[in-house]
Length: 101
Image (spheres, rainbow, N blue to C red):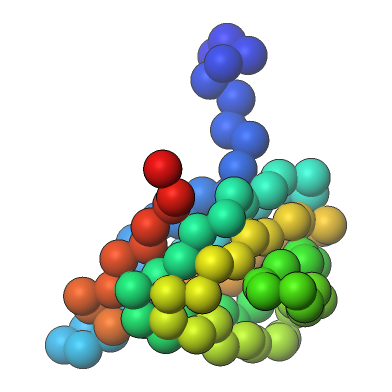
């Protein structure tokens, strides 16, 4: 693996799909950052382990193991990982995650 191949932002991978909802697994190492993005519908983040700062609007929310947070639809937000992190993002099956161009 070369330096350009090193993963520097949290990874979102499909975890489960139901009839109405899908779940993405979010994993990241301490120090990683997810750039500003939004989801086309409301999303619920459930933290399994670690710690991160969710920045949304002019507020910062601390996400820790056992906590959850509902992110409003189309609300730009970013994530800064403080401790190795694992969470699940739950949203409707037709939800898309979009990054500004």
